[in-house]
Image (tube, rainbow, N blue to C red):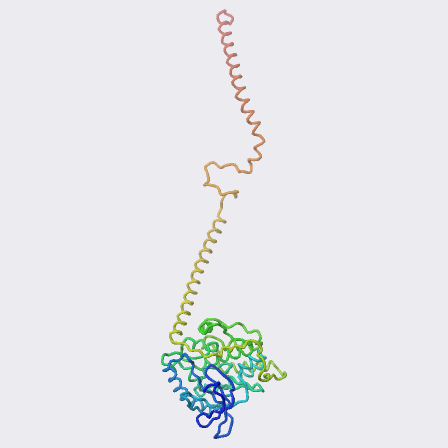
Length: 423
């Protein structure tokens, strides 16, 4: 049966459907009446995604039936009790406790970001539910705003344990694919690793981030791009979280070994509430009315990821890491080359050498050249030197000629005197 089939149908000969309470990525939740015990229940009609093969649908149906009954043994005030699981039209139907509440996803869509003290209180309630589940050996694997129910007093309940266990384990499909909401999947799940309790704490951090910020911690247009961001990037720093910001950072740590555990998270959330002090209680607005802003599903859609897709994602991440290492090595080499050039240039600059010249000089010559600075002072004397040079070549020959004539005259007079007996 689907939501369009109307109400009034008797499911499994016991539960009378009355109205639709909500819709999600894996089915429709109905308000119903248990005709045997005469009490209201929430009846979830599990609708398998259309992209599953027939074999995968059968594997999912069988596992849902088996593990939902296991989850029904989990009893806690902050967990919506799973009463039973029945089969109708070849599909599982989960019979759950009816809680007068709305999903956190609907609350955020209708009212926008919640005050951080309210989000801290919701976080403690969900954390208590997760602690009880982990103690019982149950990992939820699909914590998200759509699976957190908030009452008028802001008390929170975690729901959908049965379907979360079934869809979270990679073994539910014949091909090794996994189902989940990418914006709330932990990095280790995105890598196809076996999930443990730490995956629920990551998802809790992403859920509280959405509640206090009114947006996704990892908002990408495509599911695979979202998974890549989850594994490889950090969320955008919160702007409205106030003292809740360190809790979000601790829960959204990509390394599961370094991620905050239940005890540390609870201590930090209680400290946040203590810092808030007494203040007017906040309660969700009345149902109905226009949404506060963006009416998208806030990342609650369930997607199917093949094992090949996850391996390809891991390969891309490895390639990015290798490229980053290569780029870093290249940059380091360039930095080293520039450093060596600077050192060599500095060594040349401190070595002893002649006075600085206006331009690079050739190799030193045997005879030092006069400094260019003296040249302008010598220029005014050049015309006089040329005149003196020309005069010297005129006077010297004349003097020599006069001396030669005088010597000749003296020689002639000496001969005459000797001839006439004067000497």
